Structure formats: C-alpha cells, structure tokens
Image (cartoon, rainbow, N blue to C red; front, side):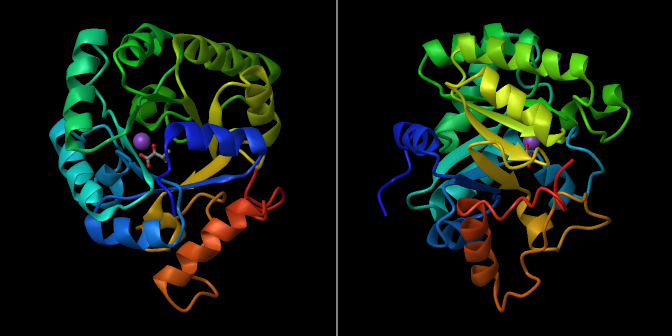
Length: 266
Ligand code: KIV
Ligand code: NA
C-alpha cells in the first residue's frame, strides 16, 4: 500500500474513511501492525505502564521514547509514525519542546504528540512553524494523573464539554493537525469534533464520532496487567492469531462496529 502521509490521513478524515491507530513499541510488532493495515503507529508513553511496569506514564523519559521510536521506525513500512513527548519534555516551553521534538524526529517520528489544552498552544505553533506536525491530546491526559486524581471520565457536564471545545479550537488555531480525545462521553467528543472541522480527531474511550480510533496494543491483545477500562475490546477473543486480531481491529474501526456505542462508550 502507498505510504500513509499527513495529506493522505487528512483525505481519509475528509472522506469519512475511519483511521485505525494502535500503540507500538518495537520493530516486530511494527511489521505486524503495518501488514495488518493499521494506518498510524503511536509510540505512546503508555510504554511506561505496559513495557516498564510503572503505574503511570509520568516516569517515562525522552530517551526511552526515542529508543522505542527507533525500534518501531525500523519495522514499519507504510504506516504513519507518531511519538509521544513524555512528561517534562515540553512543559518548559517552545525551545525545550523543539529540542525534544528534534530527538523524536531524528529517531524516525513523523509527528509528535503532546498533552494539554491552551497552555500548549504557543508550543504547538512554534513546532508547526518549524516543520514538525503536532497531535494534541485532550480529555483524560494521563501525564496529569496526579493532578486529576485518577483515571476519570472528563467533560461530563456542559461546562466541561465547552472547555474541551475551547481548548481544541486553540490547538487547531495553533496549527495542530491531529487531536486525540481520551475518556469522555460520546456526546462531548462529538461537540469537540464539530467545533474543529480541520482537525483529524482520534478517539479512545470517546465513542464513535471521531475520524479514527486508537487503543493500547497490549490492551486490545489482552496482555496488559490488571483490569482494563470498559472502552477496550479484547480482539484476541475469537481470533486465531495476533495477525488475525489486528486485522479484525482495523476492519471494526473501518466499518464503525468498534467502538460499540452501548458497550465501549460513555
Ligand atoms: O500513550 C498512549 O498510549 C496514548 C494513547 C492512549 C492515545 O497516548
Ligand atoms: Na500517551
């Protein structure tokens, strides 16, 4: 298949063709995900939890994300490669963020993702003006778990939803190309999508109204430790191989059967 580029992802979103994203941390899985038709591979700082055994993403360092990005870059063929800027690697401001984004770009990332609302807009603009595509991340932002007081659903009431819409617009105006929406009611996610027609929206626990979906690889293969949130579907259930599970994930995202409004949404 042809390489998944940012313009191609924008086309898919504009045509209503759903985008399938999964997290990925190594070359072997990068090859499998790519062959299964996954559009975007995210080297998420969730690696702190599923690979390193931490109970949050906060301890993950830039060097660690860069290492896993290099691994994934060697195994991918046509999928679009996004890497997370970890906690503390962009919080001081645009200059620090540009240095961190440079490390991830040199490791093979085609886009960097950072968490947070309006306070990140200046940084987003700085990176985008310098040729680094940026993905925002709103709703449950796991790097702020200590401030949020747990992994809770965000944007439940009207005021919360309005705040998310405002932050999304600020990110869009700053030039973000993509936006992850995590753990919020489907209706809230739909308002955010409606508020920012130019953004490629990717949901996780945010219902079916976004342009695409993402899950943590280890969650959808049911090899994560501990209890999983309800928005996760175990794609190994009914599959006879990892390849099969990955293909079923891509198919379910494409045809809109995942996420199921009743079972995987809020
Ligand atoms: O780190 C991660 O896996 C993520 C996704 C859940 C969006 O940020
Ligand atoms: Na992340």
